[in-house]
Image (cartoon, rainbow, N blue to C red):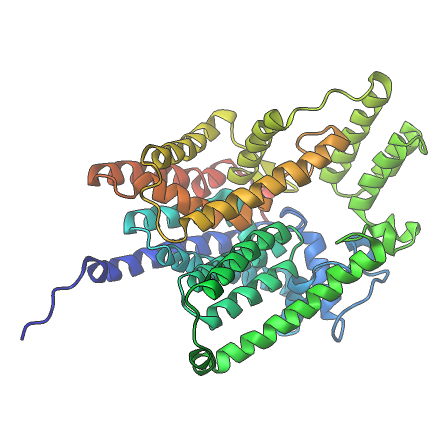
Length: 486
């Protein structure tokens, strides 16, 4: 009796594993290069995040706000899972003189795990190999994502948890059972304890989860006996993690709402003013706020801004003071409407995702971003031209999550800041898009290549892949000067 012929999926497995390995090694290699070569005080906010990790390393469990932490911001009343984990990791470092490099390399590992789960996510939605390959190339060759992967930054853990939570949500929706639901909830609750920008992402996922749960209860339901039998030790541990995560979230966000009427309180709501003035970001915002309200003269506000040691934050404070002075003399200039602001927002976000926006910045020319726009627009046109007929299980969920998160970030968070400040680029960074990069790239790659002729897949796939590759690490090496390196 002859063995059945191997399916195309089985034949692809060895090649796919090699391709994943190459993408993973390339990302880890680049991130390790940044971790070992980029000097201190270059990565975005790394000085603060590393300082927070040191504060947590000195506490038996959780630290309290103290003179050591005042320059860093709040260590209480904020999501602190990343700092807790990094602080405890420092206790395991056998070479304390190299604490910064030690934590940077741990973050490289987090970025590697993100790629592994992103590849699993692409398989979960049953995307064809051509789309999965392009997806991995795009994800592992996004300039700001790779750059931050070599730094001490809570964005690395938040991005990993975003991919993990989406992966397990889709598994649950496909009917894989209670363990996947618990894994999804544990990852999502951990994400909201890592970074507050994770909250709108978690809201989108939980809405989809609730709808899926309702459909399951109204339709076919897993038998209770089968659920108990399949739960196992992993399921019980995940259940305990969910309970701990839920309790921690209720204490953090519920406690803040009850006490401060805000999910995350302002620094001056928790600490006395003289302690708050040790924090660079508070001084920046406070100087502008006091001048705008007439409580400080322009000269006094500028003197206060000069106490900010970070040159980027100091320059930002001066720009905002200049805008506030213009508003006082001329009256507030008309604000952009939401549609025009959306265009400006997209331009800034693309620039700060595919360039390097840090305490040192390295931006591409405006024309260098046009191919990125072309790729995204072409993918959207391919989806529309085929009437979504190439949609696979999970694609609709990913599209909803990407759109929900992006609209909240753009039109609620950033537009609200713009309405107050008048500065369209304020508090806008490509890092805020990291949670939805994986599902967005999957939608783009699938739209471009799925059910297309072979010649199209090869031509378009290679062209897009080469643009992402050459526009990232090689571009950085060509343009970064010696001031970037140790």
